[in-house]
Image (cartoon, rainbow, N blue to C red; front, side, top):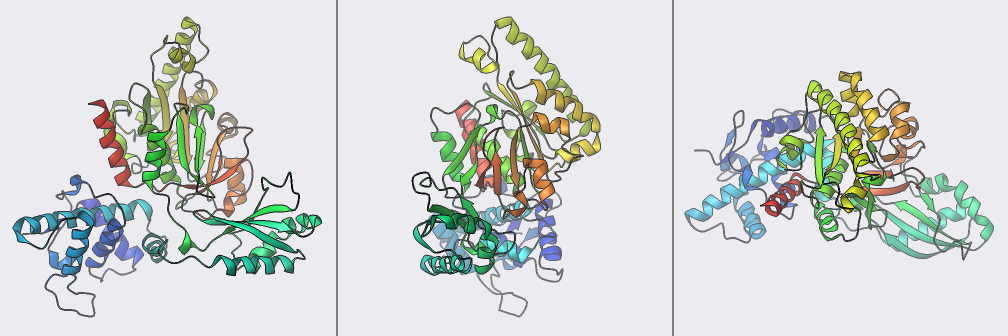
Length: 509
């Protein structure tokens, strides 16, 4: 009898890792299963019960192939780690898994859940063709290594400033998730322009790549003291720390006196939460290349709304031509008809239906003598939910049918007042995907890392996104006329989505 079960997607993930990640099909599958176990054990919340059992197209595994139970050590990586794994799971779950038949059943059940959750995490955060060893290094070891000594890096910064003819002192240092902000006091006020011109040379002195430039920030003290400035210095990747999805839950559930469609995409460079009102945007473009963190950013925006709003206040229309990223949300009662729209014909019909809904709502506003949905709801005259429409891959949608652009443009032009707001995401930011007509009516922008300055201009109307670090590093301008700011995205996992769903179901029962 088998001890663990997988499904077809798990098996595909295992094959992808062996072939594209480890570049071998001969290595035993236990290597991938153990990597998945290690990844799951890093997540503080226990895996879901829904991971019990397998499905059609999956495989069955004995403990021998996962923990190496009963195997002698050999040069193929086979070794008995069963006692060590039992000890880790006993500590993780606070249960004794060494005594009796019942503890044995719990051990195998928990082991399966962790392995399958780890495989889920791998397929949602790594893609075949990307560096798997770098992925492992970042996922398993980032934040574990000690940070470099501040004093040593500070002395290097001062030495680099002297090389460009600037004499200065370091007043303070603040660490964010990925950068350290050094507040600098210039010995000569006229050296400010030298610093501004010499940032690239300073970055080279510190060993930074051309994609990891130092940013010069206008310090809040500068108006009072012209010789004070702030340098944002990227730290090595191994010193980054992740912003977990639990923080997003806390922000959303504990927020008071914020607009109804407030969303939290992440934190600023010093780790403070960043939020904005989606209704004020009033429509949003999210762009970034593969691996930039675009899809995780969408999850953060969606969970920001789902943690707080009931179906009577929020209706989600989710269009996912890729048929991958939004599948988890079908069970949420806020999702229209409990269905993720994947077929292009259904997508066109849905968009046309939203245009009709927009016109009906516009007529309703006139009948009740109110300017917008917010006013109608506040006065108790109109009892309609806000509608947030998410298109996960705009380029795919328009590639399959250019007809989709017409209803999208109409919605962006007129839907704000009636409470319909669009979030359009793409990993191919170009003029064909994001036409001038759409661009002029979608003022809210989030740019994750892109390949070129031209792609950055398509998203933001300015360069800069080509210098971002990837993995959720973003430039954010939530509405026209607001200065662009940098943020680091929240890391949302499938467990965060599951916990949110449990909370939603509990609230409405």
